Image (cartoon, helix red, strand yellow):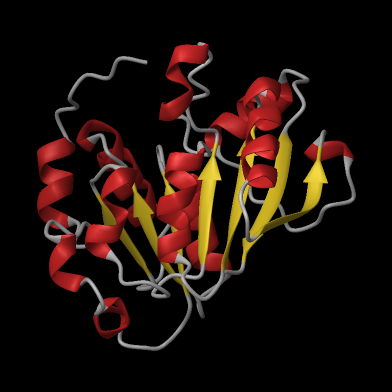
Length: 214
């Protein structure tokens, strides 16, 4: 989806202090920034921000960092966080997921959320999928002593691909695999904007939890 710059965007960047412009400066120091030793959870590709803002409000004892590579998208998430009056446990980074290890020390984060990422459906695009083994190797370095990924998608092909990628690598285990999340008995699900749209059209939502232990 092509996005045009909104007239309010510059003002949002000016008044919202949740965007970290130089995240590499906080590598190994995120808990100092938050002022506590609470666990750190990261969302990759936060979109317009409803999911991560809701999580921030529901779980004040967890620190959240949302990563979004498009500046024209992250400004929506910043505005959403301000409108929802989120806690001080939320920050945003405008960067690509391939840069994660530039911003975080091993074991600094304990969980990643990957929600409705681009499925990159053509076979030649497989390496761009956020659950491709190349990306899993990045997450493994981030989770040096263990961590988890919560993954949701509406794309069955991507979901099956992801199951195979996790299964093929040493150290990963999966549980709570849902082929139709909203018809399952899974509790405490927080929906994204895309998820609400897809599910309202009767589309199944696929979900899994993958745990890494070296």
